Image (cartoon, rainbow, N blue to C red; front, side):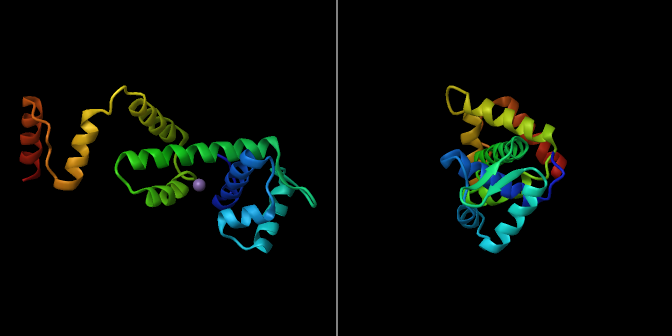
Length: 163
Ligand code: MN
């Protein structure tokens, strides 16, 4: 990952998302998206400009350089991947969004790659995999509803190892 701070990565992610929509980002847009006051935004934008991640043109707005765009894209992709994964395991959307924003900066690239593979694999299944529904029931009741002999056998092993 980049050597930038979490905060700086959040800025590049936000600027990337805003720029995807309108081609550039105003300080006001960034301020609203990150819920940070404009003077602090201006300060960070100045820093990122100095480091070569954005160019701040006074009248036109903030533009990502190729380096800045690359990081913004990666962080947003990590965010989307982790959020989708957390929602697959029944984390409510608002919490999934909040925690994705923490995890997106910390996890090893390999971990994110495998989470992404899992999310894609499940999303590409032609039908909703039955075990996802079983998992729903398990979350609510603690009951493993799969009725196969193999499953019953494994449950006995788990119960025996717990007690
Ligand atoms: Mn984020």
